[in-house]
Image 1 (tube, one colour):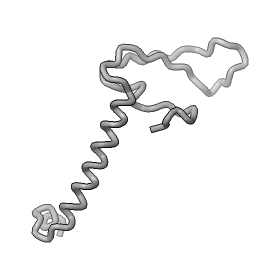
Image 2: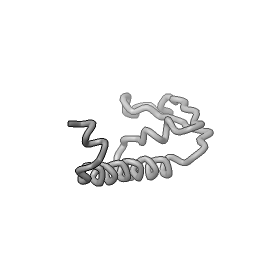
Image 3: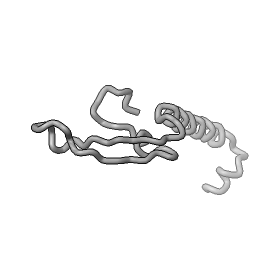
Image 4: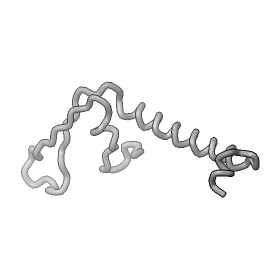
Length: 81
C-alpha cells in the first residue's frame, strides 16, 4: 500500500482482475526517462478495495496462526514436530 505519498504505484492498480494495462510514452520533453506512464482501464474492482481485502486476508491468516500455535493439541503442531 502506498497511500499515494510516493511515486511508487500499487501492484493491484495494474494487475487487478479485468484490468488492461498499457504503457504510454512520456508526453513532455525533458521528463524523467526512468518513469513510465501507465494507462489502466477495464478493472472490475478498484485497486483500493483489493489492497484492503489483501491486507485483511493477511491479518486474518496471522491471527489464526497465533490461535493454532497456542493450542497444544492442534493437529498442525503435531505435523510440524
